[in-house]
Amino acid sequence: MADKFAIVTGASSGIGLEIAKLAARDGYDLLVAADTPFVDAAAGLQNLGVEVRQVEADLSTEQGVEQLLDRCGGREVDVLVANAGHGLGHAFLDQSASDWRHVIDTNITGTLLLLQPVLERMVARGEGKLLITGSVAGHIAGSFQAVYNGSKAFIDSFAAAIGNELKDTGVTVTCLKPGATETEFFHRAGMEDTKVGEAKKDPPEDVAKTGWEAMLKGEHSVVHGLKNKAQVLASGVLSEATTAAMHRKQAEPGSGED
Image (cartoon, rainbow, N blue to C red; front, side, top):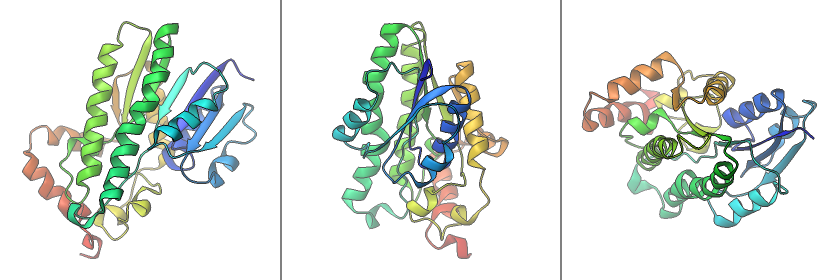
């Protein structure tokens, strides 16, 4: 058993799995969680010299969050990587209430239910690191991803706010803001026929490294990739109506066929 312990959510594949690998290589025992079976995670995290615990839980629910925390076995959390997220494409009026509520419950409510008790214990100890996955989408009015982009706008803002609240506690908060990344996101969001769904995307291992290194340095936020940084800068001077129109060209169903 290592002296250091990290929780990584959304760790069955993609960015979360790659961050879990980096944590293991830096000597952290792991508790990895996702709402999908650990086909990739189990294989990808073996033989790295640390203890790996797994839990399959729906982190959009209070019960799922409690299930995850129970698996800590009383260990203090040195690093929390709050990476679990749910994407959702298509027009808002074409989405069921249960679908868009699950996005909000996963990306916002469940995330906060997890963060609060873990951060309370970190602050009591005077040390700990939080890496939370936001998105460049949080800076853009997301036509045909309206609920998802709105949820990430909340997370981007929330991470900055609590980072400031905790600035003198010994606990750091880092928000990783990826752009389009080569993961299961677009498949699960039903966006494979969109222009952004078909476009070349950033490798998840590169995005994970950007976030992990920024967290270790205690940076407040980090945007992966020059293109994504330019997009965030542009969003600061363009109107929301303009960014919504631009996003429509990338995310409208069938746009990949144009």
